[in-house]
Length: 106
Image (cartoon, rainbow, N blue to C red; front, side, top):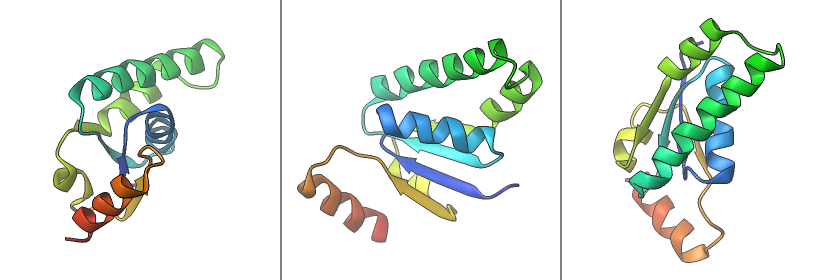
């Protein structure tokens, strides 16, 4: 599978969605306006893969392949360009969501 998926918002939901999508074979661009949130998400995704390996649900090779499919960026347009699927996972604030959808629509 080589379809590109963008996940907007790297918090609790966003990083989990990115993890599952990368493990399923999607190329994933995870974006957040906050670089430190992206760094935490990267650590959490790596920890999720480590737990999956410990439980026998994944392998080190599968982990490396999935991590290679993940891109972390603060640039919204970089994340959504060429994405066949866009998943919004930002905080539940209507003003933020409206602004985000306007930007993605461009």
